[in-house]
Length: 130
Image (cartoon, rainbow, N blue to C red; front, side):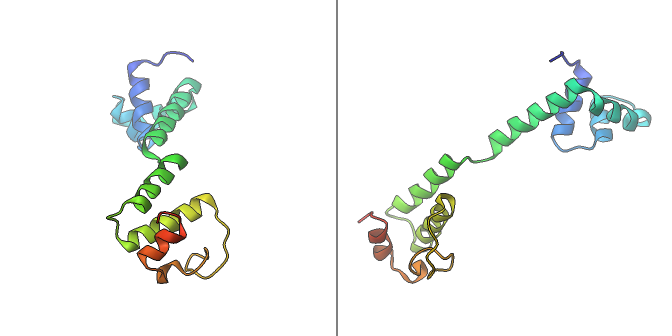
């Protein structure tokens, strides 16, 4: 991939951050009168387009929890002895959805017995924590 000059890099960063092409061009230092034209030209440049994609992918990686992270956080709630019943129930429901546990009916999400009606101790026993 070719090197981008300073204006091109600023444009790519501004556009990847959600600005319009014209606004990104203005942020990159192009004159307001030419910003629409420059923005359009910049987007048609393959190196700039690739840089925008790279930046957006990097932003997604930083802002999106992956499957393992989501499961780990939900599991931590389930295992927390001080967690409220409602939080444990929501965490179990979240784990069920993420792991695509079989839907057998009964509960509000369709997973197993009606977990909303289970006490915390019944729920902990059902998922093997007690």
